[in-house]
View 1 (cartoon, one colour):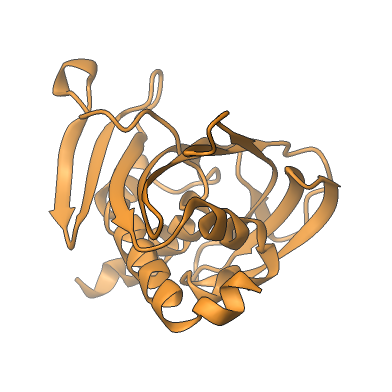
View 2 (tube, one colour):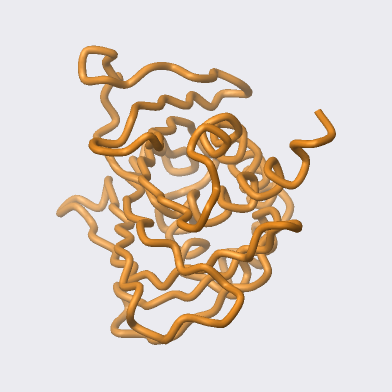
Length: 219
């Protein structure tokens, strides 16, 4: 409905950052532990459950991508090019490179009136399995790493991790789980209403990005 357009854009823009926050084993998600299938579309399954002590929901998303773990990690570490495959991001930048496996990221998400933009500062860390068949991309909020900007709401929670599993030389399984609190005065029911579609759109963008720019991605 027309009156919900600003809120819809807000939640979709949050998905840009959400796509980074993921975790969980690639096992079938069970409704016995609170997860419920919210949408199964275009090869992407999205499960939700309520965050403990909150009215907000957390997500777990399953899909497969035609790429390798190495290439996907390279994309996730390529902070300045997130706008090539995500929606409604104002900008993102690398604040510090701690090592080849660990970085600090700043991201600002644009929203429509009447909501202020949201931002986050996160520490991202890569961990490979011994046989290099599985990689974890862990994200943890460090909200006080830099001062907050006037007119931008620092998100109080944005944690999670990716799990990427090698299926073949050019195919991976991906599971990501994230928990995010956008902060401010956004009603929880409104965030929950639109939160499922954002990750689906972003993952489909990522699939297209992988198809269109293989040479650039792997350089």
